[in-house]
Image 1 (tube, helix red, strand yellow):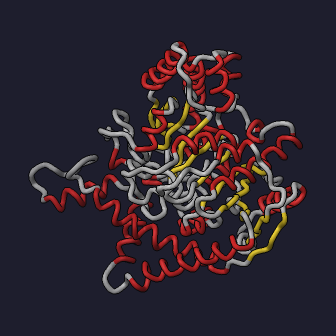
Image 2: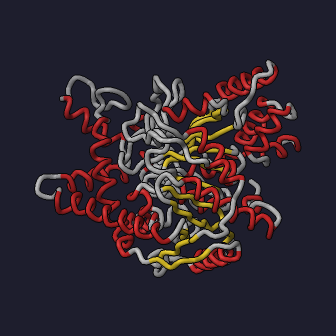
Image 3: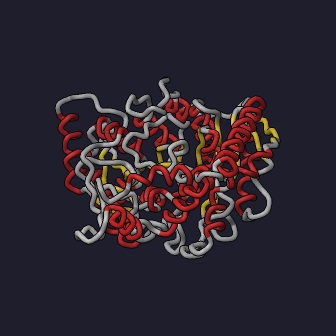
Length: 501
C-alpha cells in the first residue's frame, strides 16, 4: 500500500467525514484506500464474504458529486463500512454465513441498509459470521473461520467476528453487527474495538435475518466511541415495518460521546460478574478500570443480582426455541438451497434433505434443543420456566438501576482463545457470553470498549458498560470518558498496538 493509503485507513470515521466535507480527501480516494487494504490483507483475515467494489465506488462517486454541487453532506458521508452478512442488501448476496442461503440475492434492502445508503455511508461488502449468528467465535460459518488481527490463530469473537476483524485490521473504519447474546460486544472485546448493543427495539430488525426475535438487536461497531455514536445515530430510530421498533426519539448519543464524563455518576459493580472461569488478566484490567472510574469522579456501588447466575441457562432455552420457529421458513420451497428435487422425492423429503445439507452442526443442535423445549408436555418445564427467569433478571436490573446510573463488568471472562480450542465443547463456547447475555434478556443497552491488554497473553480486554433501556446516551458518556483517560495516559488508542498484517 502507498503511504497515503496507510494514512487514510488509520483515520477515524469522524476524521474521514470531516476531510471529505472540507475537500481534503475525496470519497473515492478513501474507498480505494480501503479496497486496497482489503486486497492486501483479507486473504489472511477472511473478514469479508463478499466485496462490492463497483457498488462501493459508485456510492463514493455520488458523495463527491454532491460535494461538488455544494450540497451539505451528512456526518458520515463517504465513510466506508463493513456490513454483517445478516442484513438484506438488494442486488448483493446475503448468506447469513450458511450454505442454505449461498448465492441468494435479496430483492430488497433491510431498514439498516437503507439508512446507511441514505446517509451516504459507503458499503464495502458483507462480513463473515457464525451461521445464522449462532456462535461465539465465527468458526461456525459455512465459509470458514475469520482470524483475529491481533493473532490470526485466535478467534475474533462471534457471531460478528467478520465485522470486528475488519475494524481491527483497518479494512474499514465502521461496521455493523447484531447482538443476540453478546455478538457485538464479545467480538469488540477480543479485538480491541468498540461495539454497542442498543436498547432492544432501538434499531429496526426489518430485513435482518431472524435468529431469536425477542433478543436480536443490530448495532454499531467502530474503533472509537465517537465513531460508534455517529453510526448509532444513523441507523437508529422508529421503523413502522418492525412491530418491535420503539416509537421514541433516539437518545442524544453523539452529544454524549463528545462530552464524556462520569463525575457524580453512580457506577455499579455486580458481584456475579467475576469468580471461577475468569482469566486473571481480564480481572486485573477490569479492577484497574473501576479504579479509573473512581479517579474520574464516579461513585462505585457494589451490587448483588442473584438471578444473573441463571442467565446462561435461560438464554439457551429461549434462543434455541425462537430459532427453531424462525428457521422453519427454510424449507427449500421458497428460496435458497434445494436438494433432492429430482421428481423421486416428496416435498417433505426435499425439505429434510435440504436442511441436512444446508444447516451446520450448531444450527441443527439449537433447532433440536428449541423444538424439544417447545414440544407438548415440556413447554412449561423448559421454555416457560426460562421466561420466568428472564423476568427475574429484568427485575434485578430494575432494582440495580434504582441505585446506580450504569453497571460495569468485564465483557468476556477471557481474552481471545485459539481457533479450534472449543470447537468440540459447546458448553465452553457458550461461556464466552457469560457477562453479555443478561442484558439481552432484559433488553437494556450495553457497550464494550477496550480497557487494556491482559498481561499473560498481551491480548485485548473489554470493559462492558450497561445502561437502562432508552438511556443509550449514558453508555457513550461513560465510554468517552474512559476512552479519553486511556488515550491521555498512553498517548494513542489501544488498537494502534495491533500487529501489522
